[in-house]
Image (cartoon, rainbow, N blue to C red; front, side, top):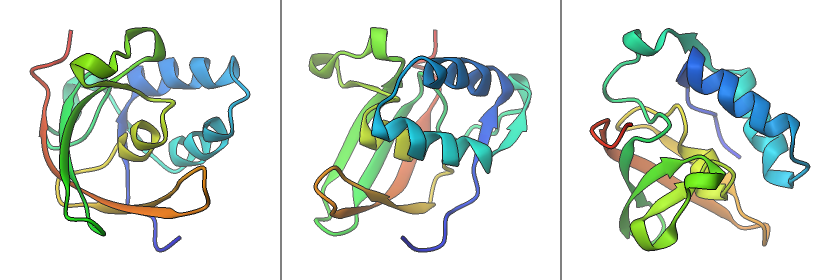
Length: 128
């Protein structure tokens, strides 16, 4: 992987995601834990509006295919592919958390390929 972008995560999301990771043994949990370990933590009310957070709607572009996709980042029990609600424990969900609009990340997939994605917009109106 290339240089990892800086991440910003609310303290509330950090605590909930950390608790979730403690109860799973999925491979993606290790990668997500690494991401959380390098994140700058801020109070939820100070989270910049252009940062991907839990329950935010995010649009991103796959830089290899130029395909754009929009989803809502959700906790596993709230994930619903028909409603474009993707789990934080899905590879793309784990890759997006804490990124800022314009940032790019290289993220390993289960088949050992690397997916290079760039965040193009974030909306927090999907938050509960």
